[in-house]
Image (cartoon, rainbow, N blue to C red; front, side, top):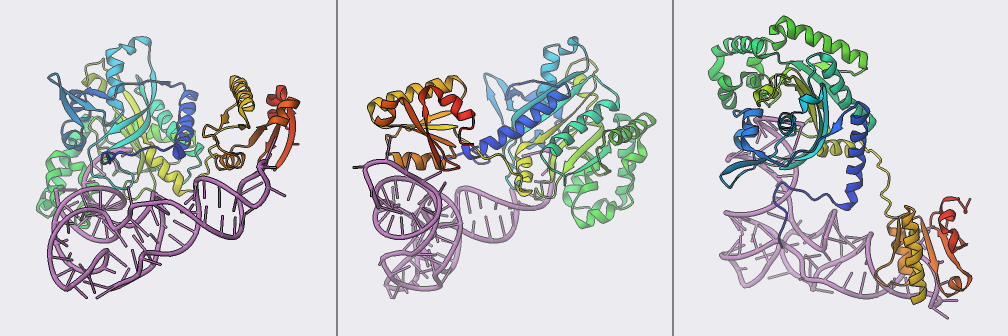
Length: 419
RNA sequence: GUGGGCGUCGUCAAGCGGUUAAGACCCUGGGUUGUGGCUCCAGUAUACGUGAGUUCGAAUCUCACCGCCCACCCCA
């Protein structure tokens, strides 16, 4: 047997309607806020991610699915933003006027060890808003993510926000933090020692108790924001208030992708095991320029669909039952089968979902089949019905049956003849 | 890359050194030749992850490998 590669998962028919529902909620909401869908390729130049995400990040250093083809290094997209930015620049979409507002639904690939809420292929939907430097955009982006969650009935996810400043204030903070930690450098855990130079901010949310203790009283990024960044953060908070989005400030939120500036946020849930983030995002004012575009600010988020599903399952969300068809037509005998096909085609032309048994089974089996698949109506055509020009239409829920003229089948189905 | 847990029919799940390896669900057929869900009966299945070892004898004990899950790390 050839089995599925590790870290991959089939989305089976019994689950797909749930995904369709969730994706539809997102799509609809994004468009409600004026965002348009953009679809970019699965495969991009490796360099796009190396430069965009940052070549010191874990994602780029050890998690990318990269391969060589015709002397080019290509990579399966590990996240959604870089591709959208590339498309924005390459197609000169900035010439169409700003802001540019896009949403996407895409698979992403990261070569990681699997656990709850984490797989090597995962799906993400997200939005990007390019061109706005003010916090109105950040607040709107966060509001949309919040809207998706609440529309899906999720009320126990917490929003954490932070500002990680601009390159200027961050450099200063970084120094202050390193000065604070340096005396105890050798007491930090091994991973944190290696973080000290590379990314000291990560030490702040290390889980080892020793590091936690050493980090107590460390300087906080928020205290090192320059005036512009500080004002922006204050403005963001009041705009979120205006939108009615509850949040808590968490100085520990540090996004793992290098391109973030100022606003950083996460929606976290306690239903996800140790992978608590269902949605993450923030502002990236230098990314577009860094990738060769005009100096254009941006802000966006990505939401993990698998993780969203885990939350929905855990909170007992009731999806609409998956209904296969509206009607099953049973033709008994050769002539009746032909008639069944004609009727079925006719109804399908009117948008009704109709099934006909293709296994040549007995009537009883066909009724079982309809029952198993939750088909609400069954129409039987036998010799009697053929002679009279009717079908025996059965309402499966009520266990009631009536003869209906063949010409009237469509009307009968929607006129509530069993009422 | 580093830890921990677990692998018995399609699914759930007994069994813990000697059994024809239970049971339930699912599926198929039947209980008046054209009617489902409930009930009754019957039927189908190459189920002990793989390979060695211990033993008269292994699903049951040992080891290795593989796979799955969870945690560290990182993130959606």
